[in-house]
Figure 1 (cartoon, rainbow, N blue to C red):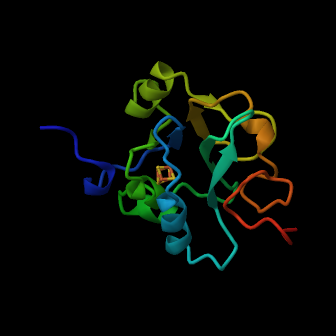
Figure 2: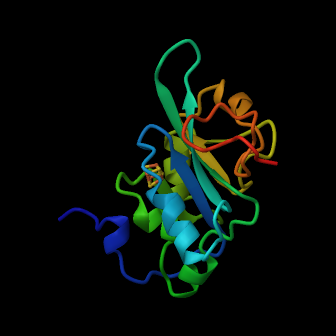
Length: 165
Ligand code: SF4
């Protein structure tokens, strides 16, 4: 029998040091994580702690989908208190978000990060410091403006950027 999917898992012991890794190879840009986060925290219109950026790839007409997390993200503290994974992780239909223990070197999360060469976002603080990325292409950090806050300079085709401050 295969492992249960993130939304099927019941309560688990909470990690001592929670961590999250985003597998960009699996992200389809569906925004389910962002909506789940926004709903759980009852954030007002236009405010996000997690925003999924659709970035035009250089020199082509394809997009890269890049979830970014605000520094105010608490990695699902309320859900973790009940032994559950953060809402974003449970909402993701492609298992692009890997959540788990960072404090132990042989935890599934640490093993996944090592095997898949996960890396920090780098450059500017466009995403939460406790989050790593798999499949992060070199041009992506430079294409992200302020990160989660709306930014008129962002080349994101799906969020309305005009009037953002
Ligand atoms: S829910 Fe998963 S696939 Fe959808 S945008 Fe978020 S990370 Fe990507």
